[in-house]
Image (tube, helix red, strand yellow):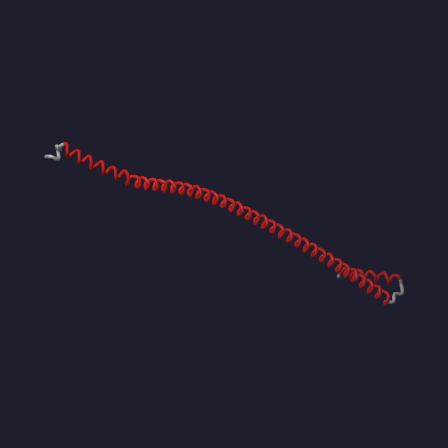
Length: 164
């Protein structure tokens, strides 16, 4: 029961021992512990600052990446638009060349037809001239003594020509 109700000497020596231990702890341990805590606090603060800087850098990098992606998309769209314009231009040029070629071929065909028609007309005229010459030769070959015989012969030849 002495521990529950200690006497004065016991309290004195316990207080003195506690004071001495506290003095040594305060003199030697607290500065080391305080310094360690300060160092740890400083390292934590530096780590937090570094984490904040890294976070800001990551945000900057992400913003730059988004900007680069946006520029790349715009460049891609520009390239696609240029390709579409080039494609349309090439198609239009091809259509134009095809129309020109068609027109040229039609004109050439028309000229050929006209030349063939003229050649046919010339052949017909030549044939008519040949027939006329043959008729004249036949008239001249036959001796016609009278005007009446000449008229009769001319009428016969005309009838023959109408039948052909």
